[in-house]
Image 1 (cartoon, one colour):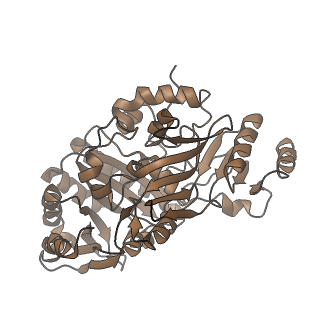
Image 2 (image 1 turned 135 degrees about the vertical axis):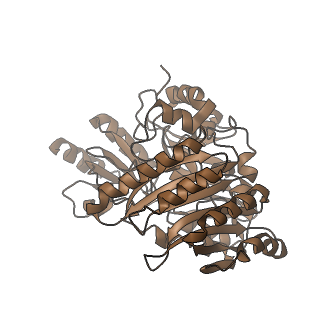
Image 3 (image 1 turned 180 degrees about the vertical axis):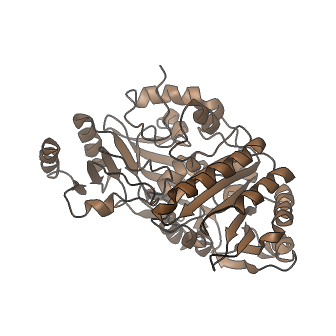
Length: 455
C-alpha cells in the first residue's frame, strides 16, 4: 500500500480530479454505489474530470497490477462499477450536457445522469431514449442497451448514439463512430464496458414534449390476472407512439398489493387520449395517475421506488409471449414477496427497438415480447437471505416460459459464463471476441459481463 501511496502522490501533480485511498475521509462515501447489498473496498478511487484523468488512471492501474472497475451512475445491480482491492475509475464528477438544438444532437459526459440529460434537452423540446429512472447513469444504461419510454418510437438509447469517446486499455483516447473505428462503434453499442472507458457520448435527439401523456393506473391485486391479460392485449396492438409496462407492486401504505399498467404516449394529444382510454376505463382502479405530464417528470416518476442504498437482488429473462400460465406463475410468486419494496416488472418490447437486425449492433435483443424482471428490494441486512431467495424462486417459476435472450443491464452479480454471454449477445459473441482481441487483448476491462478475447 505504501508503494501505491507514493505513486498516487506523484500522480496527483498531473491529475485534475481526486485520488482517494482508504485512509482518506471521503473514501468511504465515494466507494458506495446504488445497491446497498454491494459493499466493496477499492484500493484506490480515481474521481476523474476528463479523458486525460481516465488515461492516467488506466496507466497507473496497469503499472501496479490493479484490476479496474468503472463507475458512471453507480446503478449496476451486480456491483460491477466497484471492486475489492482494485481501482475504481469514478466518472461521477464528469457531468455536463451540451445540446445543439439546430443539429438535434447532444453530447454528455460519462458521469451524467439521465435526469440531468433530460433537463437540458427538454429546454429545447428534445429528448432521446433514456431509461425509466432519472438517477440512472447515461453511460452504463446506453452501453448495455438502454431501454426507456421512447424505445418503441425511437429505438434503444444505443440506437441513437452518433459517437463515443473512449479511453482504451493502452491509455489512448479515440472517437468511435460510423466513420472512425467503426468496428469499435459496433461493439460498444451493447457490449457494455468491455472495450474501454467511455468518457462522453453523442446522441441524436428527437422532438418530444415537453408535455406528454403518461403515468400509471393501479388496481387491487385480486384483479391481477385480468389486468395483465389486458396489458398483453394492448401490447399486441400498441403503436410506435406508445410505451407500455406492467408491474406487481405494493402501495404507498407498504401493505396493499397492487397490479399496475404504466403507459407513455408520445404522439398528439387526441391519439394519446384514445390510446390510454382502455386503461383508464378498465373497471374501478385503486389509483389513476395517468394523464398529461412533463416528460422530465415522467422519466423521474419511479425514482422514489428505487432509493439509494436499498439492498437489491434481481433476476430477469425475456419472454416472447406472455401466456396465461406465465401470468399465473408471476402473480403467485408476487403474493409470496417478503418485502413491500419488491416488485415484478414486465416491459413490452415493440416498435423501432425491435426493427433493427440483431447483427447491426452488438446489442442483439431485438424481438418483440416482454422483458420480465423479478426485482427483490429491501432495506435491512437481516433480510438478505429471504430477499435473494424470493427472487431465485420467482425466477425458477418463470423459467418454463422464457426465450433464449436476456437483457444485459439487468444481469446480477451471479449471472456469469458462456450461457449468459450467448443469452445477452446471441449471434454476435464471436465478432465481439475478435474486436476485444483487437482493442483489449489482455482483457484489462474484465470486471463486467465479460467478453474474453478470441483465443
